[in-house]
Length: 117
Image (cartoon, rainbow, N blue to C red; front, side, top):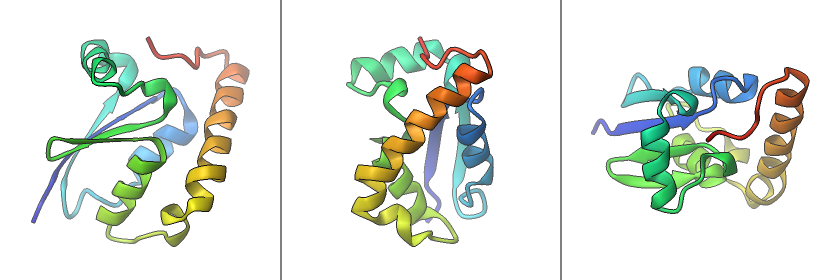
């Protein structure tokens, strides 16, 4: 059954942008990509629900919201090609935080603001 998936990410971040475009969900699901910098009202509503885009990507899957490593795990489960390491505690506890830190460094080097308002 096709699911409606809204993916909120930072298009200015090369890693986030690549992941959003690479994701293998389009064939089996209705995937909508939203650059968080272009949808401040939606990002504000998500913040009011306790989800801060600066803490990691956010997805809505049929009205349920996931963020950060949990969002990546959920997307991985729905993907046509599952990547095993994304479902591990190693990814959640260690790798995802490192990726978020690298994102900040890369955006700093690119002279981009790593905080989405």
